[in-house]
Amino acid sequence: MQCPGAQYLMFITGYSVAAGATGRLLFGYDSFGNVCGKKNSPVEGAPLSGQDMTRKKHVFFMNSCNLEVKDVRLNSTILCVSRCPEEQLSTLEEVQLFADNNGSFLCVYSLNSINYTQNPNAYSLCPRLPVPPSKSFPLFNQCIPQTPECYSLFASVLINDVDILHRILSGIMSGRDIILGLCIFALALSLGMMVTFRFITTLLVHIFIALIISGLLFVCGVLWWLYYDYTHDLSIELDTERENMKCLLGFAVLSTVITAVLLSLIFVLRKRIKLTVELFQVINKAISNSPFLLFQPLWTFAILIFFWVFWVAVLLSLGTAGAARVIEGGQVEYQPLVGIRYMWWYHLIGLIWTSEFILACQQMTVAGALVTCYFNRNKNDPPDRPILWSLSILFCYHQGTAIKGSFLITVMRIPRTILMYISNALKGKHGAWSRCVFRCCFCCFWCLDKWLRQFNQNAYTATAINGTDFCTSAQDALKLLSKNSSQFTSVNCFGDFVIFLGKVLVVCFTVFGGLMAFNYNRALQVWVIPLLLVAFFAYLVAHSFLSVFETVLDALFLCFAVDLETNDGSSEKPYFMDQEFLSFVKRINRVNAVRAQGAEHSLRNEEGMELQPVV
Image (cartoon, rainbow, N blue to C red; front, side):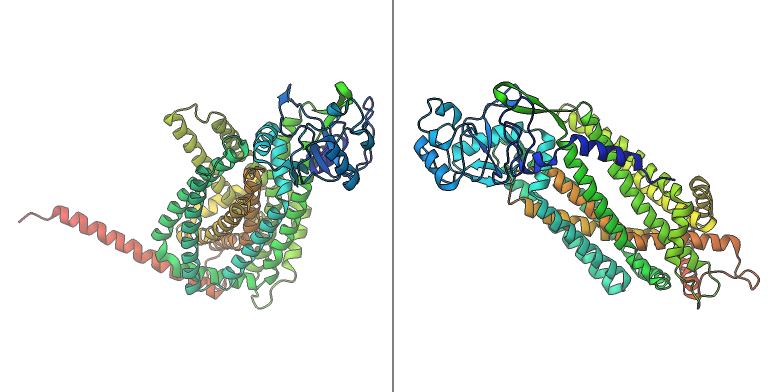
């Protein structure tokens, strides 16, 4: 069976290669269809196209102080130049001197520099005087005017009227170093969390929870402080700053809600820490039978990196897909191809589905290796190469199971994304009742997402045990877990909760680092989408690393249920679980029995008090 989106990847990739021109976005282009910094092919009907711009890497606007948009086009001719003018040029003589000294020609290519002061049409072929001092900026490699008046007008017209998709992509490209650094930071945090869970102790759990509490409060406070700073330092002419401020407010509100919920859960579940530590020790012993399970996330991370780089490359190509059209004056403009907007959504669905499929393959590999070790009678002689065996079974027989599980997650996220789009489109137009409905829907979809992930994990483990298809395995897992849900479900849930806290810690500190880094470059880039991509990537990395423990924990629970279903602990049918796991289960049962007796005793006392006569 083919991997999900294989045909989608081939189609989108072929289309983006054939129709896209990433160079236009990365390097910028002039009014005549030439990409700056590259050799260009001529466009039919445009005499100034097809020039060698290898040494001309900067985009220069001849009318940067008086930009206007007419019929969705800028009123300024755009040129590729080798250097931006760093000082004001007040006369054509100064423009000519700048060209002679620096080899940077600021007039239309058809006008030779020796004719700047002699040609009667020079004023229409050269930039409007005075030419303001400018500096190159990574936003399409444009020469940005540095005088306050010109800068304000230039930014408000150009940035606000540039297509939103190009603004987002330019934000990604101009902040690519920051994004790469944040991804490496997320990787380091995930590795640290994995080491923490591998050698966990009671003291380490208390330190970990204290760190999460202080980190959540600190990040929440800094987000509100940054939002306050934005509201008192805002240029209302720039859409980018307004969007960044809205992003900050959203992150601040979301972090406040998450902080309140997590702190409440930590307070309620604090008494289960000791049993949770014992549970992680059981998990670590299971991992010690196949220690290479801890390296499993590395290849998952490598594949995710490769896929994400590939996805972004295709995204950049799609963002520049358009047909060249010659307009008046021999200038060239690019018309977006029909249906390109719908292809963006198609590409986004492919991102979600393929990423979830990669994570599902890791879950099935870990579950298969654990099942092989668990159902081995001779604990002193573990099976050879359980991970390779699990991988071979996965790719030979069970790719369809991983595809179906990842597809369920993708399908669930589509209506969630549509609801988010509708909510943003109707922002400010709907009342409190509709906002409450939207929030309830978001909450329901979030709960459904969590349930589906647990559902898929149990189905993957049942597939590894029985070798059945996805639907049959899911049905069998539900039946088994419903029979044995009272054994140590509460401790299992708190173990999952501690692992989830580790993921939250990675995402929170990665987003916080991104906010601090992007905050130094406010005006000229939209970092809402780059920051969301970084947060999504940080979660994927943290999930791929920490899900090893989560997968082992859930798989152990299901293996335990199967063991109880098929064996009774007698000499004829001994349990597959080792003595340490068995003693842990007995302690859990004793704790549950004591709590049940306490609850029953309390209920009897209440009933007795109701029956006692009043003296």
